[in-house]
Length: 514
Image (cartoon, rainbow, N blue to C red; front, top):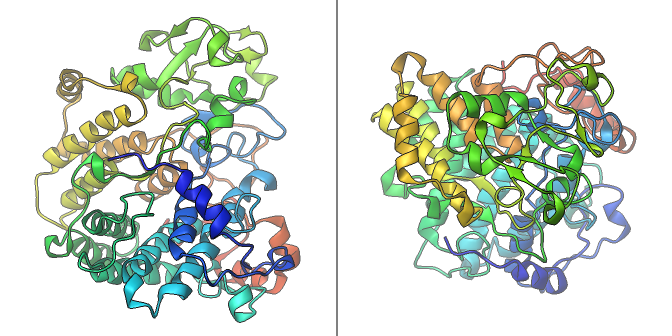
């Protein structure tokens, strides 16, 4: 897929972005709605601002990233509530990261501006699809959230939106993905400002259907009939089918000016505090996974910028992930403690020349994830096909995806084949293998890795034994708590949501996670 330069977003920020009210009190300070801007600018901003850093909770819950420190880095590392980090998804997607204009509001504005305009029919459907993606992340993270009233502060005067039942939201997400994908029409206006595919309708249909597949599979624990119904809709070739290659991956291609949201963690001021989790590193090592050499590294001086980080050891045999259950003081007593280099521990980190680059792309939905979900759907009998072939295709797709980060991360076909031969697919352990590979495939997409881990129960991880964990966490964090501000500003609607779904605690389960 051709990289889509982020300057389109800059144009949008200057020509199309506004301080549109998002339905929350602080946004209402400047409720100016742009009604003459091209909706394409607002849409590209919504795509761009959907990229999130998900390390403080999501990636630590699934034990891929580890920051053992107390203080501003706390969250999933110690299974505790820390509002500045747990509110990140909520604030970014509703309010925006410092702009007052998150994807929810931007997409709502696009929908209002294009709903009755047949000349912009495709961007209307694209906005419906991407809005469904955004709300999947919100529901999967928090449970009940404002949905039907969200983003209507200026247009409808709804300043304190009610929270909607998460099951109802997901039902509407399924409907929206199904209807919007079917309504896309290549004979109508093509929206070239789209950051994913430059308006290519065939690829947007694949994205819509791949998201529908993802949403359908969320129901495997609670309603397999519904899961099967929507999986069958998603794979319908007559409606475009799902992703068929890495060129279909939905991603934002960052650059040296507009950096990845992960840049500060891996390249900036926090670089010496962020390590890879021991379970993730160990799994790559024990399976002799060729991805280890392009993802995992030990730097001679891990706290330094890449130019002065010294020797870069990528030998899998020498890698050591940071264990969970410790803080910056107690980890000194860990049995295999490797010592320090300057201010940083000598644990393995992400490779800053490949996946940890400042301009590393952000992947939202990928061919690899889609193939693995198809493999599971086939294993469960929802659709017919070759489970082994789909599984192997999904594994290889992620290995090939590495080259989209940097040519240095290219994994030769021979290495891919050797890995699959040494770790053969087995029908007896199919769900474990498929979803463990999904865990790897979703590395750096913490929201999706965490959601699928809760849904599938794989990979098999050991509970984080940190002694100061929140008492509501019985095994793993099941959801994040609402922002403290919501409790005081939107109190009545917050209380109604808590009464309906259960305590506003880390241990309360999302509806599909039963």
